[in-house]
Image 1 (spheres, rainbow, N blue to C red):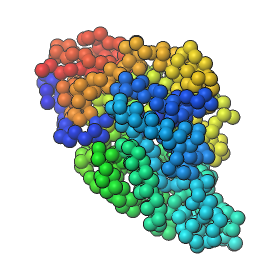
Image 2 (image 1 turned 90 degrees about the vertical axis):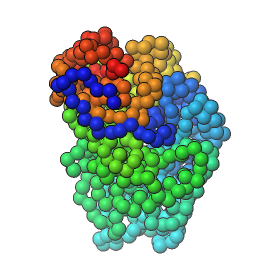
Image 3 (image 1 turned 30 degrees about the vertical axis):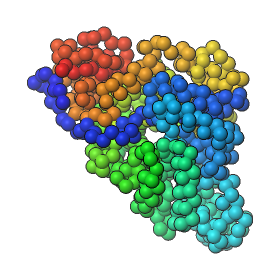
Image 4 (image 1 turned 180 degrees about the vertical axis):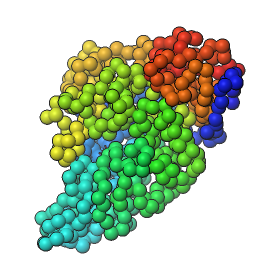
Length: 570
Ligand code: NOJ
């Protein structure tokens, strides 16, 4: 590693460059939320032909893989995370032939395709659940789900006190008096993973998509499939993005329904199946588990390949906190030989430019609406660009959420009557939910519906400010957010940052320790200024400016809320 030529400066190596070159160890993976990415049919809802039509955009952007949220047959009670048929495409999104065309085109462009697998629950319209309702208590059909008798006189009270993550009770009673468990919506009954038939069915689903050529699976609620024996009462609160009381960032779900040791057996079983296939197919855990050492158990060598780093996503815009979470992530994953992942936004959280524009920068409200604190859009975008450059320089694999390459803010003034997220109704209208990050993308500033659909239709309205974020308004402008992402992905590849090392740099002349994040990854020095004052990054060290999140002249001080990448002198 090249060192920086000043006696006051110290470096502390926390992660060595990776010797493995498997694609998933350093890939940049772009999340497509199909209903909001691009609509080819004109009904205002995105679809698979729409995705195919924009794959060139993703290839030009420079991503390695695309992860698609569910497009399977579904009544859409939770936007497709309620699957009625795991082996078919919902007519809303197209057909299996459209899927084949999409994956073929992606592969031709050199990008891999990861699909979502939802194994914790099915839709209540799945044939299995319909059969369970029609069958008797104690039948094999009921044994695929978690049916129980209730408590109290005539079993009129739920079997335990668990609440749904979307709010309200986690149990629903059926006409014959039994109750079934649903950690999410009442239309998402939980499967019983103690039943071997459930294992066999899900393995068969894995094989169906592996045979179709998918390169991996993002596993939904990967920490929830096994519940503690006896389903004991639990007084804690469960929520999508909080619930941690371990003093860390609040990214952990707690309780007897999460992170039980038995889940790991499922992943060992699946890993064996994936390893039968060529081409390094992967499993990615969506597991809201803390601390990071506990999350790392999902990515032990015989289990999954990656786990989303929600501890990173939920860290406040604070230099010390960011340094701590990056160190903890690298150490925990290095201990099991897995790559760390880095993610700032997805379809379940407020977009990061908006989170970073709040008075507590980087906090994570459960949605934002009229009447809530409105983010500072300009400041949020400035910090988001800085956060992105920090993130893309970290060694490991990075996840991008559709539209973040345009700097899109959350829709924070959506009319409440238009909300579709079940969390809004189930929480008794206390959690605005996730619609604000799921608004159809703006492709063309001058077209109706900002070019999302040929008819101008959009299933949710786009905020007025989004015209200036449209791809058409940014393409060709290197200083735009889109230009910054493209350049960053190119430099990340050229300098092999994804498979690189990380050494913290302390005591850079003129930098304030409390508000500076500085590290070296291979030949690149990364400096992020999270403070209110410009900091000098002294040109005498022969640093060559590679990229900055704000316009920056070589040798000029680094302004507040800005990250820059410098090439170290040889
Ligand atoms: C996590 C998914 O990301 C979220 O969108 C969904 O509502 C829940 N799991 C339930 O499947």
